[in-house]
Length: 425
Ligand code: URA
Image 1 (spheres, rainbow, N blue to C red):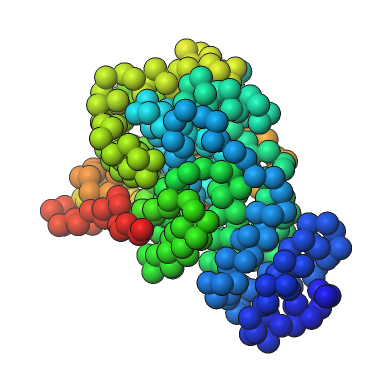
Image 2 (cartoon, rainbow, N blue to C red):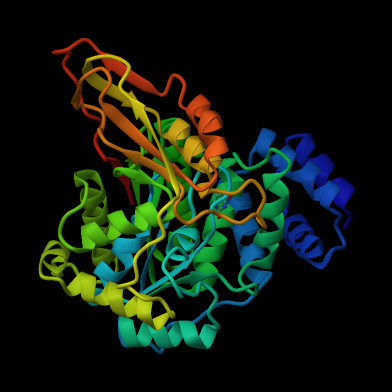
């Protein structure tokens, strides 16, 4: 077997055989297939696609490149959630302790932000003392004691994906449904969860800009999970405007704590409860009542124990950025659009995100929204507050927001986009 014949096969629109897939994924992980060869193959896959059997084999080969975790010793059923990523998507923070409060175990292996989408670990690291890196033993201990854990995935999980994802990131080959589906599902299946709920986002702030592509990605991932014995369901959700009223690390932790305290923005609460119900259903706990767990403080209690178990102080004040800049409404009328991608890029430029994976992030940086689409606004009223420790970036962030705000004539009818667009099982 050699890399060139595998690249040529996909370049010429042929199916890859099982043997070709097994070999190329393994040889790439071992360093026998060079980065430039895998880049060419990834581009050929992006351009010419893979069928369902090829995607399944590719996913299995990536799972086989590393270890598989085993949660069968836990007394509770396991349920996990994965979001394809968006702007202001802090849902994992309230969701994991909420689902644990309802009786499931939630092993939430999360990532850091890259580009305009935030990362769950970056958000939690704004809590003084909190540690993302746990050994497998520590992770199991927190799961057993608290019921939920949010931590970094260890190096041993799907190492083929770790290498390939870094390569795709710099070769323009991220936006391929077969490659995204196999990347996400190889990690989730190797992690060993019994059930999985996918939050597949569609809109300007997501990888998939339109609902059709998002639906195809969701169906592909549901098929992969089901074929591997993981009860998998996907919700297709809106990412045309940011989720909630904040985008940025400490700002999003603050909003998540508001949700756990029984308040918070309506869209964040709605999506948290929708995903919690799906996770509990998939875990075989359909009678659990997540709305009650938010209202009676038991979800908050689990949050505090989860943060403390990973070295964090849930009572410590969160970092606040040194400087602020207010963006005002350009006209009076009905706010009909506040573009998720533009807000994500602005938050990133203010210091909330990173351009390269080794870059630091600012805990306090980000964007706070004072109105959501559908609201009546008056010219000159504060619409957004930008937060940063590096005020020289304000101009650059404001530039990202050009054209992001749409205000229609007063009295214009506004049809809100639902938070949950579809369910795929
Ligand atoms: N997240 C992943 O883990 N992989 C992708 O390919 C895209 C998003």
